[in-house]
Amino acid sequence: MDHDEPSTARPADSAPLLGGNPSAPGLRESYDPQAGPRNPWPAIIGMITTLSVIVIVLFMVL
Image (cartoon, rainbow, N blue to C red):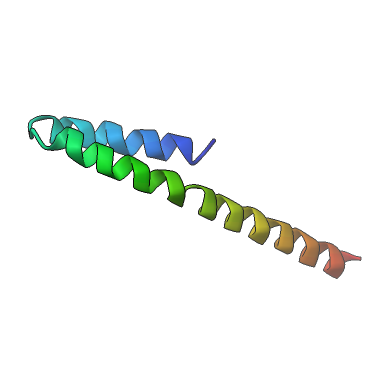
């Protein structure tokens, strides 16, 4: 959920700047496919890191 808000905020901020340029749709199309494959990996790495930290903390507490 947190990842969706910044991703929507960036195109919103860059939309008015790129709106004047005719190359705006080309840049957005080329940027979207790159954002698609890159999103799952940080999420997976973050989940693994979070789970590992939780497990380490549990072992330290117990």
